Image (cartoon, rainbow, N blue to C red; front, side, top):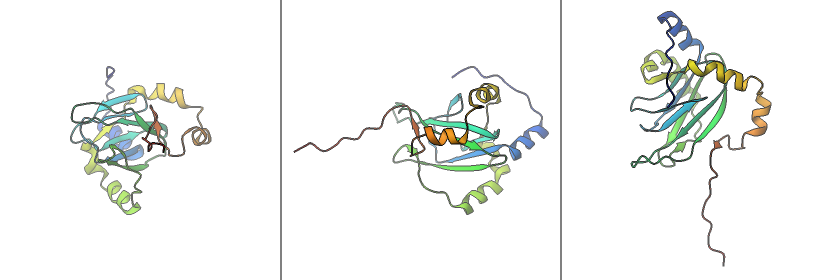
Length: 169
């Protein structure tokens, strides 16, 4: 991991950023999963449930599962354009060791969003030390360009997924 620069913010600004920034709530992510947003990456702990205070705009959410031997699978992720105060919920699939394609019901999203202040201790803070660099990298990328370049699955992977085929007869 790269060295961390600490940015001091007071309680009032932190509360404003929590309410006005975007939130990614990521259910069931196992500890030791390598998780990141934009150019920053961490290893998740037991309490990890997502990222808060995400500035509006395009972001790259990425992750790599690890097994019980700490082997890491190739990185995968998705691009997402957060709006002000947006609350995005994703779920981890423990069987596939990947993000679930399950659609989260709107009532569940609203229930979680209304509980944001209680979820706060389980959410990591967006890494503002990389924000200017990320903004410079993405300022000319439009939603239309993302739609053209991202695979139909919406998942960006660092390695091809291959499946064994049956032996030809």
